[in-house]
Image 1 (cartoon, rainbow, N blue to C red):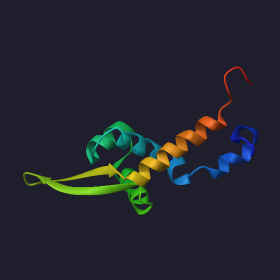
Image 2 (image 1 turned 90 degrees about the vertical axis):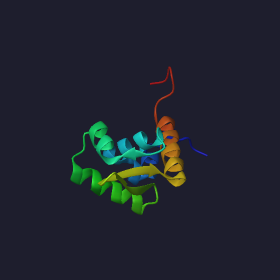
Image 3 (image 1 turned 90 degrees about the horizontal axis):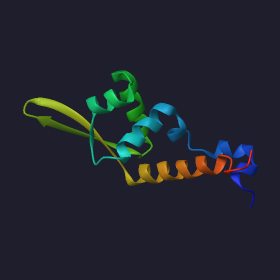
Length: 107
């Protein structure tokens, strides 16, 4: 079986839902916490509200994250959690990307 580094077309096998930079940033942040508030995620990713909402909806439709609606007192708060499917997709993506990179000492 050919190794991904021997086959440049292997990059086409990457999950495009994860490969998109904004969604990769969202999943990476979510993977390091149990639950992340919308405003915190917006701040750390640098996305505006509309972009974050749009990417979160796409990730949720793919089954990679879930949206949590709650209240802090009377204030509505939206948070997100990565799903097990999202964690698996992120792990696979990292594995595929590492396989595409040249090995130490090889051009």
